[in-house]
Image (cartoon, rainbow over all chains, first blue to last red; front, side, top):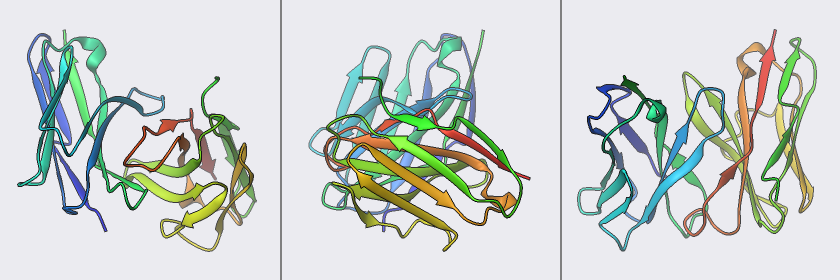
Length: 112
Length: 115
């Protein structure tokens, strides 16, 4: 089955700096890669996703890149703000299998 | 739509008691997922349903855990008997289609504490 690894487990940046979180996956058949943001005590919420037919996707300050050959994908947050502080989860799924596997999460702290 | 609804939001119980968690998916969503979240193990998929039918329950930790979906708008996750190591946040999520095709929307979660 799919195995997703996420790094780093914690990340601290200064407000205005960029933050990058990386994930690797094991199943070459995986073709959908969402990223979730979970604030303290709240539910995970989708912030951006990418499918295997695209190498990069951007939405304002966040972007995701996918390297299918290397089986890794990354979340990039530019111009970080204190409200970006949260735990971020990557996930991977195979459209034909239905279920989704999550990374262990990255706790991002943005210092004002 | 109100989104995925879960109840109760918090549950404190004693070891050995039966615990029932409830979920109402978003109307029209054909897939329903139950997840467990702990600090040690992160977010784990326990079981998911497609059109009310359990598809994969390989993530259910033990026979003490069971899940049902009697109709398209309701699902339960039951733990009997509960143990302290079951303490976690349990999330229900639903989606329009398969995980690779559509976004999963999470409920607010049930925070379970077993003493």
